[in-house]
Amino acid sequence: RITATSMSGIKISKKAFGVFEEMKKKRTHLFLIMAIENNKVEVVDGKSGAKGEKPTYEAFTKALCVAGTPQWGVIDYEAKKEDGSVLQKLIMVSWCPDDSKIRAKMIFGATTNALKSKLAIDKNAQASVPSEVEDSVLRKLIGLK
Image 1 (spheres, one colour):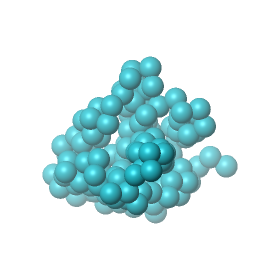
Image 2 (cartoon, rainbow, N blue to C red; image 1 turned 120 degrees about the horizontal axis):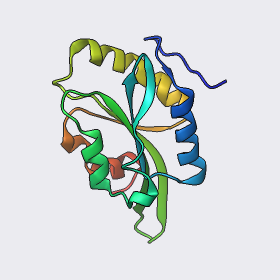
Image 3 (tube, rainbow, N blue to C red; image 1 turned 180 degrees about the horizontal axis):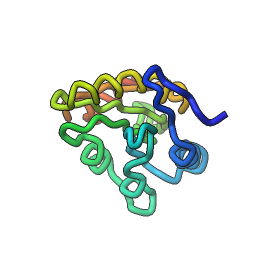
Image 4 (spheres, helix red, strand yellow; image 1 turned 30 degrees about the vertical axis):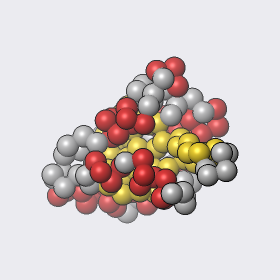
């Protein structure tokens, strides 16, 4: 079953879930940006993070950190460990800036856990200012220095 309903009644769209599954299985994107549109969670920026666009971490933070706009970023995060090996994890970043409208914050908050559960992502960072999305924050989240 493709739909997971949150406490807000918002579901992830079939299209958004399909794009995420491709990202997860085929590594087609470095990142996806999702937001609530028309009472569904939709991919609002799938182009910037497509591997063919040669995306960067900076492009991820720029696409995610939009003033007044709560949204989720899912990143296929890679980091080198001290032993030289590479750790690769899908991480969801819940971006909800302080200048978002109260109603948008409430709906976003009520939808986040259902989205995280549906996407089966175990690592989630919450951010309201760009400094909370810095590379060092995600490294700590996955247990690296």
